Image (cartoon, rainbow, N blue to C red; front, side, top):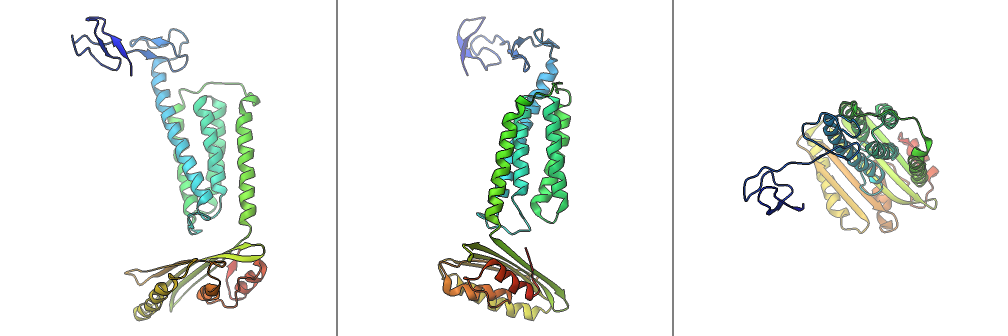
Length: 326
């Protein structure tokens, strides 16, 4: 905000004021062309300097605000995908791999290019990456983040198209303009493969069974370091058909919860719903709580897992017990 002189009384007033507070003289608002930056009159339908329609200037401003919102959303989703499993410890039904984060990161940088220059080349670039994101998400809609990616891809393309369709410029393709984008994309892919390489030291073993006795599900995620187990994260779901069995099982589970949480390096959280569903999340650091590792690893019903075992050895035992491992 700046102070200017009133053209009527000469006193200092804010340049944001609609009228002079001293004499009431209405203030003329300056309008600038968003294309060339030159001042235009309020009644002008086109910029006298470059010919850009004034209405298009307003539309372009709204479009750029929307594009900035898209960039923020995409970077937030990307960050969530990259840190979800290792730092937030979320279940694989929410985020399965960092691949969605890589796609949204690249799309975010594409949106930055498009915000800087609203031309058709950048628009088609966004459409192409959004299509890749849409296809990736559709392949596994059971994962929550993939479902979100599908919605974001569709909404981004539809709303962006509606806002920018009248503002797009025709440009010849100039590869030099895309050097930074290409470099960032290659760097993102490199980061992804580094994360994947580090993530290859993980083993996820799952088991589900539904019968007359009830429903049960296990997901055991092992992290390995130097061919030995570093950490175990477990998820268990049980819903016995018999309410009395459910109550008895919960009593045992709740007792375990009080006992296990006293150990350093071991966390155990269990809940019991009104529908008689028992849900357990637990994790143990094999180095900090070595004496409890065998006990916690056997909560899935699979015995014989020791923290000194290799990934292949653990996988073999779980598969022998009917688990699916990857």
